[in-house]
Amino acid sequence: MKLLINGIRGGDCVRSITNALLDVDLGARVNFNLEAQLVRIEGRLTVGDATTAIERGGFRVASVVDDTVVDAVFRAGRREVLVL
Image 1 (cartoon, one colour):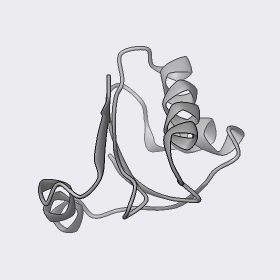
Image 2: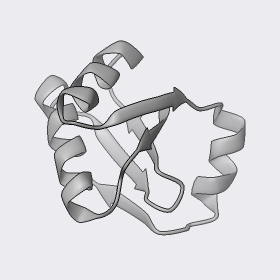
Image 3: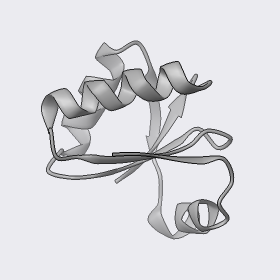
């Protein structure tokens, strides 16, 4: 799933969101595009689980993003950070 999250600014935000998601699904893979404020999540999380975890961490999930549009942004390689 890919989510647009308002307020992602840097490393501290990446760590907070990643930790919140890993608390729910330890095996999740989380990918960030900081410039676009997009987060790609692979794992067993549902959209509801991911949204709840992220919002408990103080961030707002603006929307679930259409894969066809976002894939082009992620492939462009703009400030993408991979967190394993």
